[in-house]
Amino acid sequence: MAVVPLLVAALALGACGRAAGSLDSLRDLHSQYYNIFKTGNRNAASHLWASYILNRSSTMQAHTLEHIFRGFCAVSGSVIPDDARTMYKTTLPRVGGGTVTGVVRHCCWPCICDMNEHVRVDTKTVSTADGPHLLNVLVIGDPCLRPDELDKSFEDPFSGQAESLRLAASEVNCVRGKLSGALFSDHGHPIIGVFFTDPESLELAAASSQAPISQAQAADDPTFGYGDMCLMRKQQGYNSGMGLIFHLVASISPIPNSPALPLPRSALPLPTALAEKVEAAPDVRAPFGRSAVAANPEYANVAVASIVSGAVLAGVALLALSRRRGAARPGHSSQVLQAQADVE
Image (cartoon, helix red, strand yellow):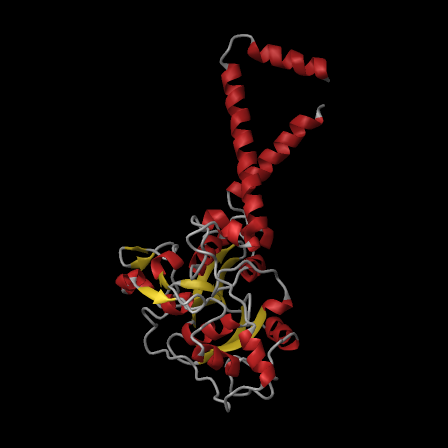
């Protein structure tokens, strides 16, 4: 029976560590989904993932920090595994001029199209357990420079119905003219992820590429093989991936003097195989206006983790409260000690 107090203590320590937001693994990050996205809606809100991680950077070694950033898609906000299939090599404009080639992590190929069109690379020096660490970060223009645009409606390319952008991207909010919850890059833009430029990531992304066109054939394609599919998706009204949600939010206030790199224009229509890939591309939006867990099994695990963590914390709190109340009653402590001795 002496095991029971040890179990309670272990649960308490685990709960306290999770409550403090310690990040040692992608599971730790994913378990915080509903603490990060209060409405359960991560659409166009990866700045909240990024801020949650960066606010804890001083407790992590640099390699752990970068590893944790592999756990979500910077465009869709989806939770993803650290798997080679989530890696996409791309070239993006750097804020202030020039371009840089690196690797991004995505849930599906349509996100590389949105990345090419709207996302840029900037820098951010953060504190880590190893000391200051320079990151290449993914940024968008701050939509809160024109907050009224968030109140507009749009025609959803999936349903054809009018939808509210404010509802579709409910975690995109403004406070005093800035994106709420965001941390900002060296040039003052909201950070939505990390751009991996290390040789190991570049080699692994090239070796595991699932692009329909080889990188040798796509030498002038900044998406390294997805250019034709991105152009066809755009012609079809962005009817895959995040649909129009990320596109609309990120295009409200584009980063000035930093146009998207052009995609090579092949002869259309596309070959049948490519056209079929475009037609079969998934819808990866988080459901809005209803429970994300009920509508999308992607969040079942993170929801369970959040519920378990909450239950453990509640149990620990009740146990502590019970002990305090018991200690206030004369003779109670000695009675408890005697009862424990009798059990053992």
